[in-house]
Length: 118
Image 1 (cartoon, one colour):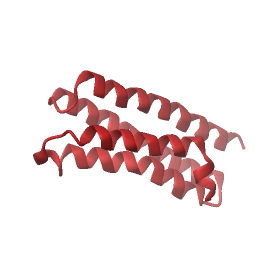
Image 2 (cartoon, one colour):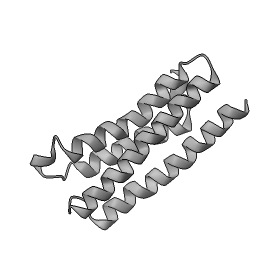
Image 3 (cartoon, helix red, strand yellow):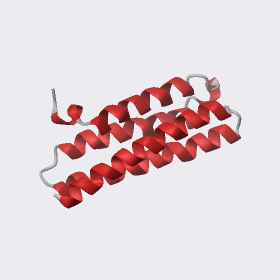
Image 4 (cartoon, rainbow, N blue to C red):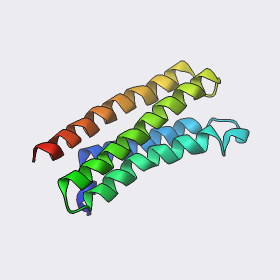
């Protein structure tokens, strides 16, 4: 097992990506290379940046990757809002993504804070 796989925040990021994949499966075929692809790539980027950052030799370097992961998370929130407004996600689906993103954001913030304190 790699060290990053032990991080609760990374495990949560994988679950977040699973949720985004689940909910974008219902998007129309013509959105396959539009919002669906963008949301999936951004969601996967959260866990990917945590994994890559954990391999860095310093806390400030890891912290920077946590910052990038947070940016990717916020991209998904924005894209989910556009998806809801375009009728691709219903209110409940949007709320599922939004709620999961809030939880993930708190975890990322906590990790970043712990990296700056150490």
